[in-house]
Length: 162
Image (cartoon, rainbow, N blue to C red; front, side, top):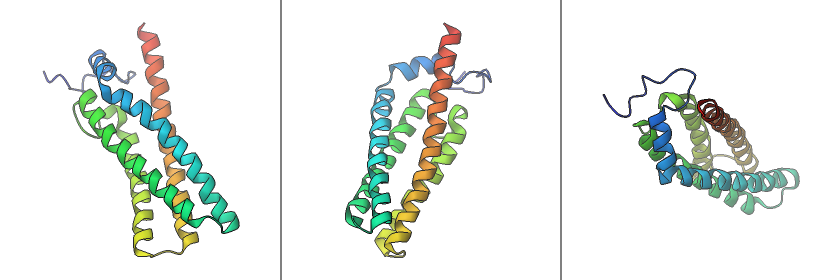
């Protein structure tokens, strides 16, 4: 039997005991645990800068730089998250336990990448760019909520198993 086989997972549980052991023993769990709150802080700062620009017309450069930095964090957390998923579940993406979170992550990445493309090509006005950034941020908040929910489910599972 493949040690990463997720087909035997009980439907109510996020992790098998083996997956939990791999999750708890890999450095990638700590890396995700550090990057996720850092990305959220970058998001909050960027959101303020984007909203400030949209409200006042001031600070376009700062808002733009902040969206670029936020996008960099997103790419970094996606790559390290795929490695984490490979270590824990045996596949880089779309493990059954995180399938829908991964699907939605691609929407988040697509919107952030569309922002970068629009910025690079000057295809949108600055206000439209910031609107696209806000759409990307709304998708990010939904996706972050999906992952926070999964963390809560994992904690509840761990408590139920003792």
